[in-house]
Image 1 (cartoon, helix red, strand yellow):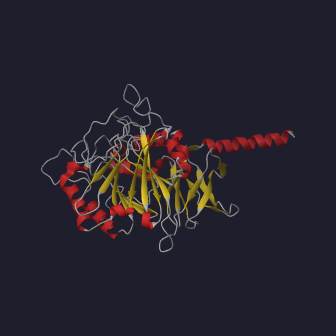
Image 2 (image 1 turned 180 degrees about the vertical axis):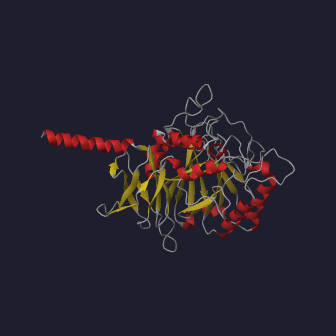
Length: 438
């Protein structure tokens, strides 16, 4: 009997040891019909894998390859579930050093449905947010912490979104961080390890763009000397489908969910200094802008979301709005008009307030820009900025997030925008019909 108890104790301690090796995650990344990306980070080099199974048939188990985590990449790695079928929900289990690691919340993912030419687009829910500052006293500025109320991540999780789209400033690099690989990866690790985020990572598919604070110093542009390192960190910690187009560098990409296509833009990698004169100033760069216009023109999606770290429609030349790059902004809006591109909606963060901007266009559909900020970073107590395009009643300060519910058959397809405070209480809602964007 004593020997049996001893063996049980040894076994328990060994399993606990594997759990203690987990730094953060697991996190669900991009979803496609035939593969899903999963991410995990350990505290030291360890063998990791995922075992997964169709929730309707739990006896048939599949597994990813086993990968040993590496210090060079902060012991973070990505695992691909490639034995999946479209439109299926899966449960999964994390194994470290071949021992199962139990988490106190569901570990699930799903694949995209094969619906085109067969049925109406599936209903789904997308969560949105930006500006996530996680305090670390020894590296923060003196005084009250800039970040607060991390329970907002639990509030997002409780809304049961299918996916979460992080709209930039998802990490706030400090002065101690951005000039070294050690500092950059340590900051990403610190933010990603926030306890309140973990359940959201475990079963909600996560996508991201970046803005200045996860790219480099405040208001940084293409001149930032260490941007290859921060790009390496972004690639390491996020599971987007791809990073950069046409070998240009940066994070440009796209993904689809149902009848919506999302264009991930990079507003930092190609950005000329905002104060520099005597040049043809740019935020997106000629190559990225041309790729975007081509991709929008080719897209058959009902809704075409263009995600940029800063606001596009706000006409005020303040802070880092696209209006500071007036010529390029006009090129983009003119191209949407000239090519008769339907269903365009901009998504943005950055501004530490939330609002919906609406650009009315003669003889064409209106274009919206939904800005959602901030998740945890500090902001103004009241919104004094006079954005002439702001939709009445949508100006919001304080910590908040949004959800987009895509609902209904083709004839009445609707996006229901809802903005919530940190506790999950509804602040405002607005419906946009697909028929309005034609």
